[in-house]
Amino acid sequence: MWGGRFGAPPDPRLRAFTRSFPFDRRLARWDLVGSLAHARMLLEVGVLDRESGEAILRGLAGMLQDVESGALRVEGEDEDVHAWIERVLSERIGDPARRLHTARSRNDQVATALRLYVRDVAEHVVDGILELLEVWVEQVREHRETVLPGYTHLQRAQPTTLAHHLLAHVWSLLQDADRFRRVHRVSGICPLGAAALATSPYPVRPERTVELLGFVEAYANSMHAVADRDYVLEALFACAVLQLHLSRWAEEVVLWTTQEFGFASLDDSVAGGSSLMPQKKNPEAAELIRGKTGRTIGALAAVLAVLKGLPLTYNSDLQEDKEPLFDALDTVCGSLRAAAVLARGVRYHPDRMRSALRGGFLTATDLADYLVRRGVPFRTAHEQAGCAVREAEARGCELWELPLQILRACCPGVEEDVYEILSPEGSVHARAVAGGPAPQRVAEQLERAQEAVEEVRRWRRACKPPPIYTAYREGRLLAERL
Ligand code: ARG
Image 1 (cartoon, helix red, strand yellow):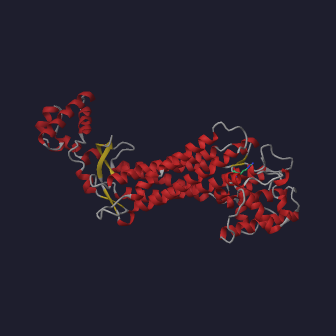
Image 2 (image 1 turned 120 degrees about the vertical axis):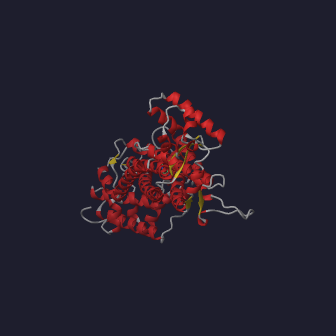
């Protein structure tokens, strides 16, 4: 590929060290698609003659087809996937293959393939998010009236509903979907035509390759086009946050399925056993979703460190963006799939949740709020409700079991109607402001979440494969108009 000025072959030890083919081979499909667009554009502007252009397009299409069918294995001793494509194309079509690299460099080529890849995987990640959201939303619907303690500091704090609780996770995941849509958009700058860094003297049409590849826009600066990997960082950040969200949910699965909590249990098909202790049932998938968060955070840190201080434009260091990126994207895709399966196998136990509502005086704040509504300053109300808690604790009963005259000794202003807000259900129903746990408000929230999910679905449906890829599928690569 570049032997002309060299008098000796590369040292095999360094070649083994510097080559990227073992991991960038997964870009083969996208590099072929990028090459199809490049070749078609060169043909259209007359840089490639008809005969070579058509031979190249046919050759690349044949390779793409064989890669997709598995007939052509992406393997060999090549330096990287780009070298592999040129070699195999040469073997298949001979001399015309030597014209494909006109007006491009591996620098704009790799950036194009990587951006196409990131856009494609971002769509798959959004599919995975939608699948998990579907399971959670179903569970929200089933548990609108299931009351359980909400926690702060992992101490029982105030009553809420399971629907309200699960919706909190739903909104986090909707934010993740948003982030991956952003990743899709910012990866939409097409670097083709930038060549090594300074473009080329050929009449290339970057807007045309943008169109053929379904990108958002052409590069504005050819040096930026080949040097920046900010879209890789954005993808990695989106992966890290998504995985972190999954991990917080997974941690709850671990915690809630303990005998200590007992708020949930796992179907046998989603739990693991112990080789030693016959009775064990372990939440392994949840633990691994939690555990894999380390990789995604590490991947982001790794690429940040690779990019820091790199002079413009291309440097071999940039090759180090791929393994962390691939690993992080594989991790989130795998974790989303696992989370959807696991979530379907989580059984909730409303009775256990109900018994956890006892003994913690979870409605003490409701009592204070009741007093405030009757004109007592909040600080005084806090004190009076605290007195009632002390009283109930001493008697070994719940706040709602205190006789009225005992309650009155602490809180002079209370009437009979105080019992309406002292029970967990009463507390939940009283919090009927927007975003709160009252069933009516949760129903509205669920509707809003479902609209947001629908919006994500619409976006996903509007994603189209690159037009040049569609043309290849339809056998129209050589069509007059494309
Ligand atoms: N394998 C390289 C990478 O992944 C491709 C670009 C190589 N360009 C170069 N000038 N050596 O970044």
